[in-house]
Amino acid sequence: MSPATDDTDLELVMAIVRPEKLSDVKAALAEAGAPSLTVTQVSGRGSQPAKTGQWRGEEYVIDLHQKIKVECVVEPEDADDVVEAIREGANTGEKGDGKIFVLPVFDAVQVRTGDRGTDAI
Amino acid sequence: MSPATDDTDLELVMAIVRPEKLSDVKAALAEAGAPSLTVTQVSGRGSQPAKTGQWRGEEYVIDLHQKIKVECVVEPEDADDVVEAIREGANTGEKGDGKIFVLPVFDAVQVRTGDRGTDAI
Amino acid sequence: MSPATDDTDLELVMAIVRPEKLSDVKAALAEAGAPSLTVTQVSGRGSQPAKTGQWRGEEYVIDLHQKIKVECVVEPEDADDVVEAIREGANTGEKGDGKIFVLPVFDAVQVRTGDRGTDAI
Ligand SMILES: Nc1ncnc2c1ncn2[C@@H]1O[C@H](COP(=O)(O)OP(=O)(O)OP(=O)(O)O)[C@@H](O)[C@H]1O
Ligand SMILES: Nc1ncnc2c1ncn2[C@@H]1O[C@H](COP(=O)(O)OP(=O)(O)OP(=O)(O)O)[C@@H](O)[C@H]1O
Ligand SMILES: Nc1ncnc2c1ncn2[C@@H]1O[C@H](COP(=O)(O)OP(=O)(O)OP(=O)(O)O)[C@@H](O)[C@H]1O
Ligand SMILES: [Mg+2]
Ligand SMILES: [Mg+2]
Ligand SMILES: [Mg+2]
Figure (tube, each protein chain N blue to C red):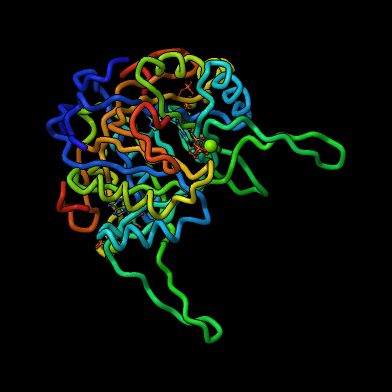
């Protein structure tokens, strides 16, 4: 495995979305022909300042919101469609809808078959 | 930190494996001389269609299976051995055994010492 | 989205830190002007050998320690400051303080607005 980037023939689309939009995101990905994905429960904050509340007379700060991370490793030529599908599934128009990041991936291996590269995803 | 890829002197091996194979994967990595790793509980689906079941007369769909993500940042020259060790530990020969992805990493820092690059992993 | 690395105009700073240092890390990031982050509960091991203990006469091995993963997507020119802020927040001087990795990111999209690249983070 070489560190040179012309070997980068896959991409990781990593999205942070609202938990209640996960099933819309999954449906949009399946419809776009990219059903494979990995899901992680995360929390986070974007650019909004922390919200302050009161509980039993004590002030507290909610600064991390529950979110879901969705990761899809895809061929580069499919990455834009996958990003668009996730955006359609995740969008409510309200602040907090999330972010989508695209990272380079050098290689993929399917454990069962040993297939590599685009054959492995 | 420059975005140029000739600065990429580390790699992230990210594997999604069966929970019940985690200890075999850890053993295989230790034996390969690469014991450091980060573990995350995830769920996901690969290329199989969702499974349908019945519960109290209601139909339901299992579409996400519990998996474990194992991440190891290694020197590029060790990445193939690390991938092979994970594959050996994770393989059962059945569908659902998982995937291994390899991503470029620009730099690493050890918090305690401030060491960077290959000295930090 | 092209796989060429001169398109890489963002970076992912991924840190694995002690759970009890998360609030110091968040404060250091906010102070450094980089408040956005995603947090995941993980476990892991570094270069220390597993610790052996006794419980009701049985020997057991603690080989994975609870940690927190903090991820921040930032502009490349800010990556060093973000790494330094995390290090300051996470450091106790004891073994197990953690690691910080920096990965290339091709692109970012803000779900609500559709903004891309540096406008999206
Ligand atoms: N730069 C970033 N790095 C890492 N994670 C991020 C970043 N920006 C956002 N996130 C993750 O995405 C989640 C949702 O972010 P959010 O949609 O609130 O972004 P925002 O920039 O505040 O946009 P909006 O104004 O639409 O709310 C956050 O809770 C966090 O988990
Ligand atoms: N392209 C992908 N992107 C992100 N995660 C993936 C991808 N493919 C698989 N995964 C993750 O790996 C897990 C295991 O996948 P799995 O082994 O079922 O892959 P598969 O392609 O269906 O191969 P097999 O036919 O051997 O089952 C999934 O549950 C998911 O978490
Ligand atoms: N090479 C690595 N790849 C992936 N995760 C790592 C790696 N090294 C460390 N980690 C993660 O960081 C956590 C903390 O590591 P730790 O600080 O113990 O590193 P270390 O190399 O043992 O340094 P120290 O001697 O300061 O303890 C681990 O539990 C693991 O989750
Ligand atoms: Mg927001
Ligand atoms: Mg499968
Ligand atoms: Mg250690």
